[in-house]
Amino acid sequence: MKHTIQALVENKFGVLARISSLFSARGYNIDSLAVGETYDPTVSCMTIVVNAGDEKILEQIKKQLNKLIDVITVIDLTKREYIGRELMLVKINLAKESNHLWASVKPKIRGNILIEDKNKIVIELVGDTHFLKEQIVLLKPLGIVELVRTGKIAIAV
Image 1 (tube, rainbow, N blue to C red):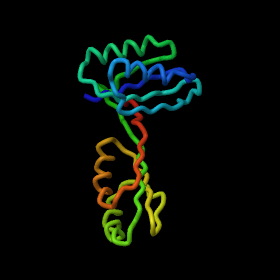
Image 2: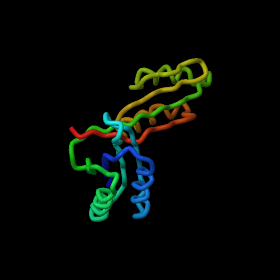
Image 3: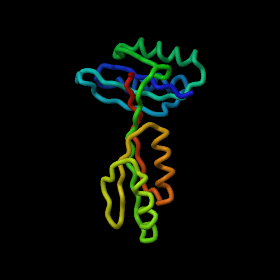
Image 4: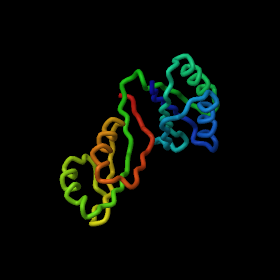
């Protein structure tokens, strides 16, 4: 099961390394990680998505996170109501034969077209993981050249 964990941490050098090493030391791969400064420049918010089937080990990780000096709070958002979003940028090189396909796909895209010329398209998409997967399926026949995503950010509601 994927767990979304949010940690408020002091905005200091090395905090990210200490926290990520905590997960790797226990054999968990971090599926998604987003870190950014909050309204207080001395505090950063880390949103960590980890695939963990064993609740006991996940509880241990949360306890270990809370023990770190630079960690202010740790919240497992998984069992709470929250809104989560990712940003994705997609680049497609247009060939002459794919222009008609782009014309049929374009109205279905639910994002911002940042660049559209005769050679390429760059699209910005924001949404949850399910939405982004749907958009990838829609764009894949055009020939995705490059795709980059941020980690998930989340806020409790």
